[in-house]
Amino acid sequence: MRAYALHTLEGVRDCDITTHPFTTADGLGLSMLRFRKSSSKDVVLVIHGLTTSTDMFIMPEHRNLVTCLHDAGFGDVWCLDFRMSNRHPYNMTRHRYTMDHCALFDHPEAVRTLRKAVGDDARLHVIAHCLGAMSFSMALFSGQIPGIRSAIMNSVSLTPRVAGWSRFKLRVAPFMVESVINQPYVSPDWGSEPGITPGKLVSKVVNLFHEDCGVPSCHMLSFMWGTGWPALYRHENLLDVTHRRGGDLYGPTSPNYHRHVRKMVQVGHAVKYDPADPLLRALPNDYLAGAASCTTPVLFVTGRHNHIFEDSNIACFRELDARRGGLHALEIFEEYGHQDVFMGKAVDKDVFPRLIAFLHSQAC
Image 1 (cartoon, helix red, strand yellow):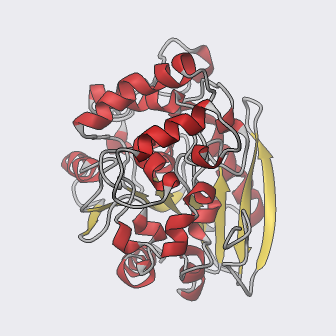
Image 2 (image 1 turned 60 degrees about the horizontal axis):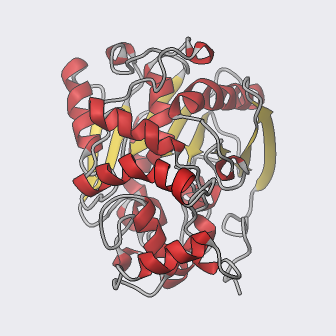
């Protein structure tokens, strides 16, 4: 029995909630949820990471990001569910999408759709997480999305760094999932599947290597991403209900995004996955090449105990600060990891005030 309904909206109250669908140029139907409490010239767009969704920003069990933004005077908040969202079916197919597709098709079209509703004179701020932050950064720093007033990028942006075990998984996971166990995706909820399935067997094997907790979806998440026990967060930062509903908050994913991450880790920064793809010719082959021309101030955020992308955002801040000094900022949350920066039980006190202070500094 679920503690909260799947994709519940009960975590945000006293506002108008509307759904805004849109279609990408490569033929996918995506959507945004708008949480409008009051009129505001400062509009915030919030973007999830791979396998999560809007749900990570509207959780009922703690004071979530959307509610805190409303209370801080940002009355018009939009949450994008792009092609990586578990609210859409695309992760469950044997696809060949990469971060390039998100950068060229998803984020620019989402901003165009939002602008039609709020107007071109609104000041648009972006808060993005994980591969949502990486793909949005690729779009932003390559000039695909002009007119962004400020941005906050959590965990990773243009310079991904991962541990040795994570590098190994990036190398072997796509082949193992697609060719050995013959599955279109890997899922944190494999352990809950009825009957005997390849995924359930994988989950049981993974459980043998995790004595850190008794939640199979948590074990699978560490297997899917990063290096650690657990990898995505620090257990002590989560409420028990958040920890146990990991199978709902994180969804399945095709391993093809891992291929693109691996290439960027090998190169040392964000690059196009397939430079020969004519569909993506509007994008640069090297996303750092023109980064200095971007005038949008970015707050790079990371937890000190980030076991997914380690010090990626520290490296990115230093790289971009060397190219355009004084424009960007860095914030390290000493007691946090990767995902708990948004989903922890005390983020409204430990994390969100710093994010909101940055937004206020850029709002006038």
